[in-house]
Each structure stands twice: as structure tokens, then as C-alpha cells.
Length: 438
Image 1 (cartoon, rainbow, N blue to C red):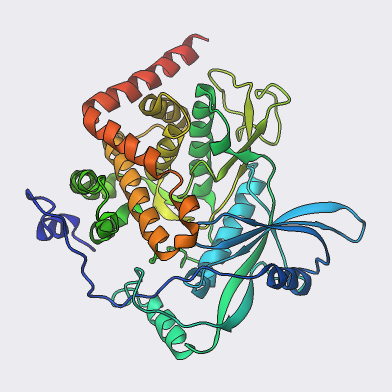
Image 2 (image 1 turned 180 degrees about the horizontal axis):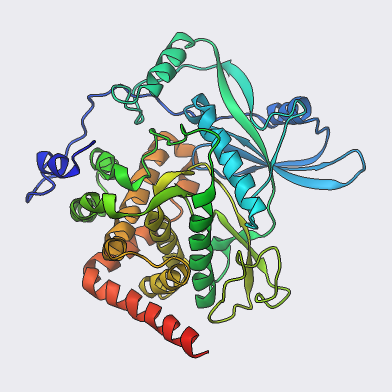
């Protein structure tokens, strides 16, 4: 077991460190390559793997590290359907177990009433399929796979090194194209924030009954997990020259020393782990949301107050689905909802109120929420800058939230934990009082 306290002390994060930590290049690394299928190759996959021939349209969709296409096609009965063809990056494609569990989780949640996409099998009945592309050189200089400690990645390294001049294999998956638009494109009302909080809490509760098809679905190569905050420290170098670097360092220092010792007290289980404003889809309401519909909250929980603007029509992108901490899902959602409302900090209280109406936080979780929110902002800023350096052609998409995240980080840190928590908790108390008297 990792002794987080001793690790923190060893790297100076429990002391008054005056300088930025330096990057340590003591481990072998594997470069992550985004898939780059041409439209013609994508059409071949659809035809040969899924028997889809009458393709009307094939449009690229944005992605952080994979490749996605929006597919519009007709079936044998001339009925039009929409799909997402997803090609997984080369590193994650080395672990089919993770991708398989992601598909099973989406199916499980769909059966439980959540608006998650269906996964369509190939003509051979497979939920996952491999697709090989031409010769690619494997660069072992970048990314974060710690081969010295993660035995499963010894296999990845040796396989890629041995096949350096051979084809690259990617996992391919065909998903249902969910209706609606990303939450980022709409004006989010306060009652929607409450509704989102309660929906995510229901999802956390529901996933407690999820039985993964493999226990090997923790992505050790991921840097987004709360338990891996220490891995972010050397990556602060990707903010060199950025005025936010000093604040990101100072905030990460405090957050790390506060959060890591409390991790054993956080409740954990399978979580989505990427509930940002691009992975939640909404569509305009055509009925009272308190009426039962496929987009209503699971088990029809009481909403206070009533929303009359948007329904949640899709929860997508399970690429980071992992064992994790429930409160981390809440903190992430709070961060991205702050980007979509002029009141920014206050909106966290509305999300938290909705979450706690279903799944009340423990004392340790509640006391750590401020630091979890702040640390998630720092992680997002650091990793998006790192990814943009690796994929400069995708910089506009990757850094689309950078300015807003930096602004929120400054605002939160200047206000301080006590003031921000008072705002959140006061808002949550108002919901509790209103619901009790209605």
C-alpha cells in the first residue's frame, strides 16, 4: 500500500516548498497515438465489420484522444439510423478488458433507465473489434505508463517494440448516436443543476450493483483519477510560461496534502469519471419533467423546483469509466457546471443539493469537496495543455475551456475554502427547506 503521507513529505508537499517540482524521467514511457483513420477506411470498417453499406453521411466528431465519426446510414428496409463509430487510441486498445467493461456498463445503465448509448455488435456478434492500419513508428519518449510498477504494461511495451515496423491495432466500437445537444451549448438553469446532481447520485448508487465482466478495468495509464494527484506534479512543466502555473502549483500542493490522507474514508465504486459539459446531452422539454418519460430521473425522484426547459437525453463517453470515488464524480460535475452559468461559484451548491437529495455526503467527503473541485480544475488545465502539446492540430478543441477554468481557479482560491463552502452549503440548505415545506 502506498503511504501517501510519507510520499508527500518526501517530495516536499508537506513542507514550505518554494520552487516548482521538477519532472522525473525515471520510468520508461509509451507514446499515445490518436487513431487517424481516413473516411474511406472508416467506411470500410462499417461495411466489413458491421454490414453497413448504405452510408449517407460520415462526419468527424471531436475527441480528447480517440477518433469518432457520426455515421448516418440506411438499413435494408430503407430506415435511416445514426451511429457513432469510435476508434480507441493505441494505448487503451492494448487492454480489451477495459473497453469491454465500458460497453457492459453502458448496457447495464441503459437497462436501469439511464440514457446511455447502446453498443452494436459486429456481423460476427462481437461487441469490440480490432482494426489494423499501416506502418507506424512507436515513440517511447512521452506519456505516462509506469512500466516498472504496472506489470500489465510490460506486455504493451514489448508488443509495441517488437512490432515497431508492423501495423498498429485499434479497438473499434459502434455506438448509438444519442439525441440532443451537449450541455455546453445551452443556458443552464438552476433547477437543471439540481436535476443533474440528483441524476449522477442515482447513477453512482445504481452502479453499486454493477458486476464488471472483468476486474481488470482500472486504467493505470490514466492521470485523471483522484488517487493519482501525485502524478500531476511533474506535469506542471507543461504550464511553463503560463501565468496560471504558480497558482496551479500552490493549489495542487494544498489539495494533495489535504485529499490523499482522507482517501480511505471516501466511498468508492464504479464511476463514469468524465461528466463534463460535453458528455451530458440535453433536449428541449415537450412535457412536464415530473411526468414519467425515458429522460426523467431514474425512479422519478422528487425535483425541487420543477424544470421546464431541458431534459437530459444522453450520458455519453464512458472512456474513463473506472473504479473511483463517488465524491470525485460530484466534484467534476460541479467544475463543468461552473463553466455554464454566470454565477459560477454559487452553482456548485445547486449541484451538491441535488446530489445530496439522493446520496448525502459523509463528513470527510463534504470537508474535502472544495479541494476536490480545485484539484480537478488544476488536473484539467495541466492535462489539456499536455495533450495540446502532443496534438497541436487539436489545440482549439482541447483548450476550449482553458480561459474559463483558469478564471474559476483564481476566483475559488482567492475566496478560500471557508467562504466557498458557506455559499455551497447555504444554497443546499435552501433546497432542503423548500422541499420540506412544499
